[in-house]
Amino acid sequence: MLGFLLACVVGALAFQWHQSISSSALALRHASAADLPWLLPVFWVGFNLSLLPAGLLTRRLGAASTMAIGAELAMLGTAGAPSRPRWAC
Image (cartoon, rainbow, N blue to C red):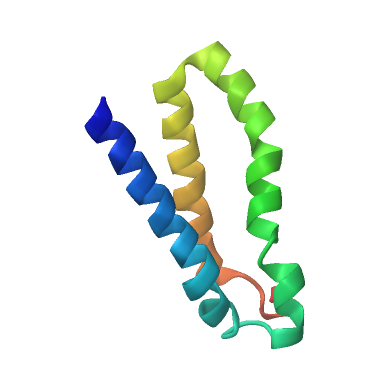
């Protein structure tokens, strides 16, 4: 159990580093620097809005099924991102 918790902490720190450091540089490819304070928190807003439905779905379907649905949605979003309209950015 201690190894799992340590892995979770390391993963969380890596994700925070990416969100704080790398995301800004990647977002500058698609948005102006003036838009970044409004653009970067969008991920966290979407994440927090998905917590309630994910919790309800977990109670109904179980954790493994909910994680599989989340992975499918992430895959679809990632696959569809390059085909977004030019005006959407």
